[in-house]
Image 1 (tube, rainbow, N blue to C red):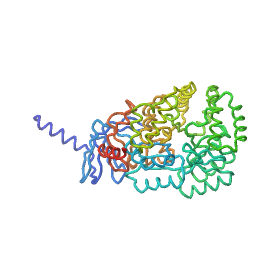
Image 2 (image 1 turned 60 degrees about the vertical axis):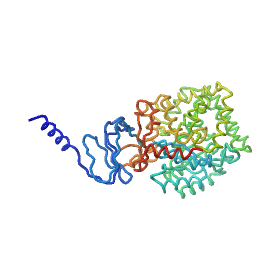
Image 3 (image 1 turned 135 degrees about the vertical axis):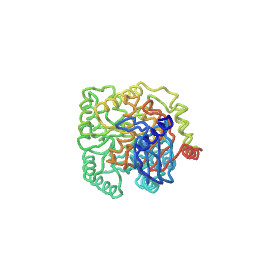
Image 4 (image 1 turned 90 degrees about the horizontal axis):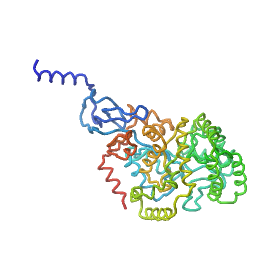
Length: 482
């Protein structure tokens, strides 16, 4: 048998072993390396997408492209991750920038977002636009307004406190508000800091009855353990966690009750700030490891998830917003917003971080690692556009600080992929790269498991089956520039 015959025999043997599934009018991604949030790196795969869903994932050596009118993309040397989630954003915080947020999210690989509080009519507008454009806009999950007590914090009294909340003066008012929100098909509920324990119990009880998860800030009238035991499903920003992890937690709790009672006639934002200023620094200075373990054990037992917004919570100590590369993204906002943000930052950086800023930053990083080590689930969220956090780039900053806190790159990726899907009971549809799932995907030019910063190296984004290549992503960003 001559050499040519041997080569021909080998080729025929190889092709005869390949699976032959003929699919037409589909998107094929060949020879791509998949990053599975649970299994890690799976090399040299072919992914077939049709009608918005992944219909086939198979080793490339076992499969040959077949069919007609297919779009074939080479994934050689590239990496495929599930579409990313930003699990804490606010469309209504700066209404003037909301129209730009869809494109900013999509061009940065964020295919799903969780809006954690805003006027119901406004956030419904963006949820409805998302539903109408499933291949062009990120998926939007909404809570509607923050459910707050009296006085409510986000009451529209100043630009820093836009009307994101409703102030509820009784348990009956809480109940009626939740019935209204449920009729409007919100995806979850958000409890806030001025609720009484009785009002908070109504929120968690009704959430359970209606099948709506309850997230939020631990009310200042409660401690973390009592809020978790009452049915709080998740905590945003780890807000008020430090107050329950102090050696003098009971003393701080009694003081808070007095401050809440005496401050009833103050505006909500002023009252909350005065309590935070009186207690947070003291609590961090009096951090107690045994007390913290007691609190975290309860959170783990009750499966009270955490959305740390770690980049936001460490801004005062780290000040990354002063970096030119951070401010470069401001160009995608209106001129007036960009100028205002830069002016505020210029004023801030004239004074160095305080010792408390540095201490709180260190506390946040250490606490995120402790939460992770306790097996408490986390999701990546930014709070954008609050705190100079740009929609889109902010999520990549959040993943980077998770790794800085001690998570592996794969563990950080889980917080923005499979974990949010699990939170909403959508893990059979989103968050992984498996057959029958929605094709929300991101193609990267480099391996994020080698360096989490590689999540920024986006080659293409796929939203429910539609491919946006780098050229199209650049066009969309260019259109946002001032």
